[in-house]
Length: 72
Image (cartoon, rainbow, N blue to C red; front, top):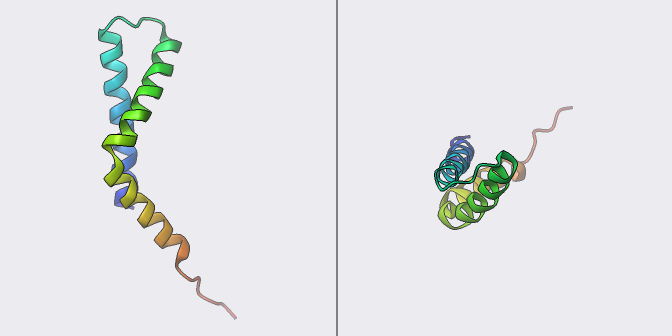
């Protein structure tokens, strides 16, 4: 569960930091601010969080691929 939490927290933090920087740069419209922050943080997370994304993917696929116990 830890890799999922680390990746999710990193994505949220990256979005908040991006939105704050855009706000400081003068982007005032809230809807536009959220949209641009979402787009920029998504691209940045693709590059910056690849290791965490791989760990999360391995954790989730390991849970899915695990055989379920048979109950009679």
